[in-house]
Amino acid sequence: MVAAARPQSIGQTIAVIDGFSLYLPGTRRSLSAVQEINGVLMQAFHWYTPADGSLWRELSENAEELRSAGITALWMPPASKGVGGGNDVGYGVYDLYDLGEFDQKGSVRTKYGTREEYLQCLSALRSAGVERYADCVLNHRMGGDSIERWRAVPYSQDNRLAPAGGMREIECYTGFNFPGRAGKYSAFEWHAQHFDAVDYDAANPGEHGMVYLLEGKKFDDYTALEKGNFAYLMGCDLDFQHPDVRRELINWGCWYLDQTRVDGFRLDAIKHIAAWFFPEWIDALERHAGRDLFVVGEYWWPNASVLEWYLGAVGGRMSVFDVALHYNFHVASNSGSSFDMRRVFEGSLVARRPTESVTFVENHDSQPLQALESVVEPWFKPLAYALILLRRDGYPCIFYPDYYGAEYEDFGRDGNRHRVVLPSHRFLMDVFLRARRDFCHGDQYDYFDHPNVIGWTRPAQNEEGGLAVLLSNGAAGNKWMEVRRAGTRFVDATGHVRDPITSNEQGWAEFRCNGGSVSVWVPES
Image (cartoon, rainbow, N blue to C red):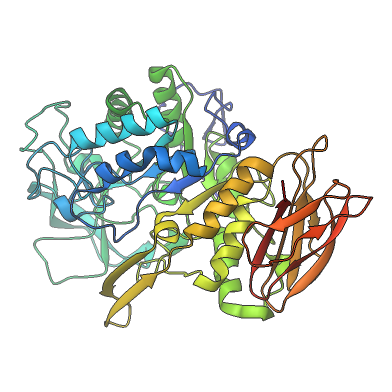
């Protein structure tokens, strides 16, 4: 991969090699620090969270309950006003400074509530000891306030390497002056020079499937290479080569930290944004705040080698979601007993970079009827959650509908409307969370020696603790495993296997599980 020369950095660069700015790992709060306290992250929303403005109040009311359950941090939905106003999930971002305060896009509140309710929610979570990570959408803007004329070259959405026509004048909604906010918090306005591409020409509304690269611009480098260059995703794509763009995003980030005091960020769609920008952005925000921030990026690609490349490209300044492991779960859940469970971590990021991986089972993009639909079937979810919550490596993230359940309707790719029911797995997840808190410490012994029945133990430390996990994607199974507690009665905390098991004098026991199930064995006391 060859990059063009980097624009002048606002932050401090320690070296430039082959035109790429390299940064020393900074002082951000590391994932390993989170792992030391057996931290658990919850994605506290999903695509179909009701658009009634109640989420901020709900999370405020549940703050203490969530912390008591063992959830130590929440990934909050995007809090800024989107193009859909009070119905926008938040990824069609219109005004980053409008947190539900101004009458814009047909609503004062966002989908989740008002600015005041948001800040009260953050305060309640902080008081309960729950960290708050804000979902940050920097890639694009949507819903421009005025049309601007600009010359551009059309490209097919599926091929950003070869132009689909010559330079021509287009009409694009690239004027953003936010009349409802009227300059409060920031007087910055967005115009065509701040973007590199759009996907709509108001002069030719019937033309579809095109990306228009604005005159004098190029697609950002150090992005995903899908479609030739995947810098463009949607809306008005920010030009990260432009110094005013980078400066404004840093100014906004500093303002946001001052307003919210969040503990970190989940960065959206990072494979569409020049990788060299984020070390600069994170460093500037941490300097401004005078504290460490935890940052996790969403680079949606199932190949762990690509995810590893990205981690290197940003100089260890963030963690990323283990998309490769999610797809392993997806395949396993759709394969039944034919999937070899010994290979469940094969090709995953957590197997290679355990202290930089945020593991997850499902999220708002992969849930049924969504753009990246890759469902993990309900029968397999208890097994998958055991595999991320009860092991040593990775920072596990649980999904709101998997904990609480959800029902919704929407149109699928087949053009038909479907009703979806996602069952709650809260009982078992609470069991896993308690076991993680009380017993998942120290060493880990793996027993991945059977295609269907696998297990591991977290042996006792100084005659205290001790945990054994056994699961099967086929028939019922049993396995001898070491827990380093002699003559101790173990019970299955899930209740799936009723009879207790006693370890022998050497601290070993033959643990059991039912078919298509998971058992979590803990000392009876």
